[in-house]
Length: 104
Image 1: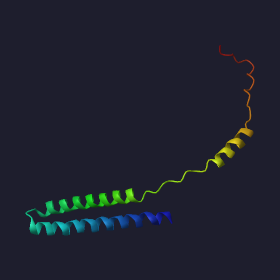
Image 2 (image 1 turned 120 degrees about the vertical axis):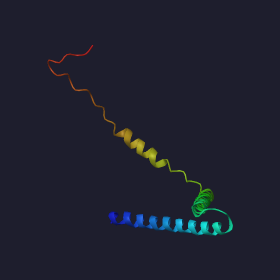
Image 3 (image 1 turned 60 degrees about the vertical axis):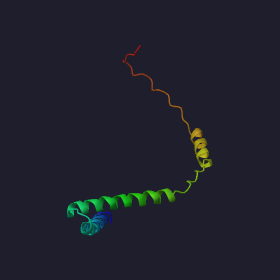
Image 4 (image 1 turned 90 degrees about the vertical axis):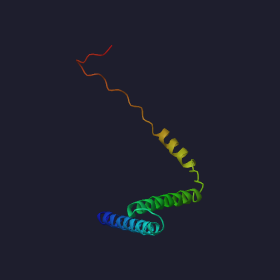
């Protein structure tokens, strides 16, 4: 199932990108009728304008749709810490091996 999702997402993004470029070309063609731009300049200008409009819309939507984040319940974490303290085990170092020297 996971392997099928990636080609679908890639196809969708390709379709959206193609439609965006076609929209920019159409807007550029209309600009070219009224202003003295080359077709490339008009398309590049309209594509840049589309990205600016899209960025403004996304930023506005993010600013408007932010809701206060609820604070987590710390009472459950306190219980967890108490359980951890009860389970503490003291581990002693193993005795030195015979014939080994101690570092001074």
